[in-house]
Length: 390
Image (cartoon, one colour):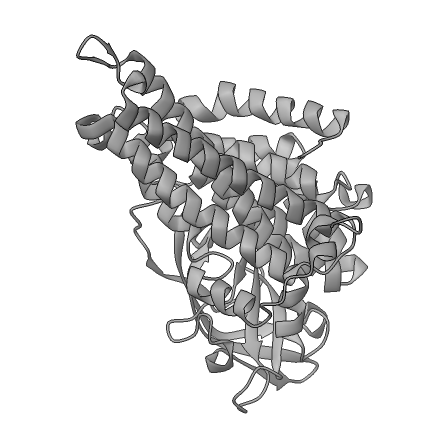
C-alpha cells in the first residue's frame, strides 16, 4: 500500500491542475512541431518544479524523492516531451553543479537554472560509448591552470537549446573508467562548443536532441567538478534516482494510455453495447490496470526507500525495468483497443505508443538492468518489505 502524506497529495493535485489546464491542451501541437516547448518549460521553472530536489538556499524546495516522482508522473501524463526536458533540467543537468561545484558556480549557474533562466543538460553518451563508459574518447588535457576538451557527444537531451553542459571526459589516454572527470561548460563564454547533427526522433519529438562537438574548448580549473577522476562514481551517486524517476515517468505515461483506452472503450459501441463490456476488451483493461497498479507500487516503494536513506541499487533497477516495460505494453494494448483509431493522429494514443519507446534506454536499457539485478539474485525480504516481514 502507498500512503502519501497530505502535503504530497496536495502537491500532486497542484501539478495535475497545471498539467490538465496548460500541458494537455498543448501536448499534441508541440509533438507535431517537434520544437522545444520554451513557454511551457519556463512555466515549469516559474512554478518552482525544477528545484524540488534542491535546498531553499538556491531557490529549491528541499522535497523528498516521493514528491519528485509525483511531479514526474503527472508531467509525463500530460507530455512526455516536456517531462523529458524537465527531468534533464531538474536532475541530471543540475545535480553535479550542486553536489560538486563551488559556491560561486552554484550562485552563477544553479540558481538561474532552477528558475528556468538557463537550460542545462548532461552529456555522457558518445557515438562509440553508451553503456561502455570505458570506451569514452572525449579527452580533457591539462592546459596551464585549466583544461582543454576535445570530442563528440551524442544523444544529448536539450542539446540545441542548452546553455550549460556537464560533460564526461577522460583525463588520460588509459583505457578504463578510473580517469573520467566531469566538466561544466558554459556555452556563452567558452568557444569551441558547437551543435552537431540534430537527431530527429519518432518519440518525445519536442524534447530536442542532438550532437555536441567540442573543439579545443578551454575550461577553467574551477569548472572541473569534484576532481580529475571519479566521474563514474559521481554519476553512480544519482543513478538510482534517475532510474526511479524514469519509472515514475513510465507510470505517468501508462496512466494516460490506460485512461484514454478506458474512455474510448466505454463510448465505442459494437453489437449493441460498449466494447468495454465485451470480455475480450474487458480482460485487456483488467490486465492493463493490474500492471499499472504494480508498476506504481514498485516505483514509490523504491522512492520511499531513497527517502529513508537506503541503498536501492537493485530496487531502482527493478522499478525502472518493470515500469518502463509496463508502459510499453500498456500503450500497445491501448492502441489495439482503439484499433484503426489507434493510428489516427486525432487521438493521443499514437503519441503515447511512440513516446513509450523513449523510456527503454534512459537510465540503462532493460538488458543492462537485468544484468544489474542478476548480479545479486538473493532476495532480502527485510530490505524489500520492512523489518517486520515474515
